[in-house]
Image (cartoon, protein in one colour):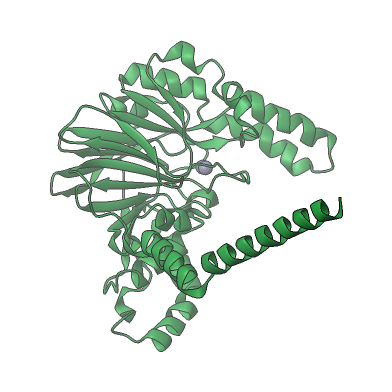
Length: 363
Ligand SMILES: [Zn+2]
Ligand SMILES: [Zn+2]
């Protein structure tokens, strides 16, 4: 009996020694260093340059104004051939742009749809990272309707001390002082409800800004990107309107900001019971200037787009089981695929194919 016990103890000691030896190898400094080097390479250095020629949209942020544990604020990266643009700069989105492997130093311009805080919050970070990430010698172009000058001026001023620290620390050759911050590139639109203007026309890429209806917020625009026969539309915040339907005609993908009123009402009812009267009032008012998923589906159907992608998800969807509640009756109005956008999603429209493929760069 005693011999058996001793044998078991002996086996346990051997197992512990083997585990300890294996752990010592796994956690040895050279192996940890090799692992870290590999991970750093993947995350920071070997950002993919192997893109087929085409139009791409990466969702760096898909939340609306409410805090969402899984989503950054509204921000879509658009890559057209060698061109790289960012539409809107929602809170926390700058880090997703980098984590998705886009090279911030190569961003040519940020395009703003309007100046609600949830669409501009990360503009300072994007301007700073684009400057230091590419030793750029000119400020970043920030394209937007009239009013963009005020926004850019404010961020430039807020970041001016930080700009100075970085030049003093890293030197003007690495962070040229002339490249800090942004330059506002305002455009104006006629009084027509469906006014539009081409804001970029370069190397096969045409970007059209068009009026949307986010009243009482004005101006507010959406953007259509056309590149070598491929096209996508980013609605910005709007209710369904003629101008959006017109500009979305025949686009491959409509990225539509969407708010589900029935779910916002649940928050409203709870807020009404709480001691936060401002939340109750705001939740009563916001459905009036956003499209519902159903409204988005009707727009997608009328415009004949191939795919509808919802972003600016409002309110946050607390659990995937509630995705259908968020979509409501959207499926009744549009027969194409409807995707609830998630941070990290990349929609690819290569010029040599009719396929729309979707992957997630954050998974
Ligand atoms: Zn918004
Ligand atoms: Zn808004």
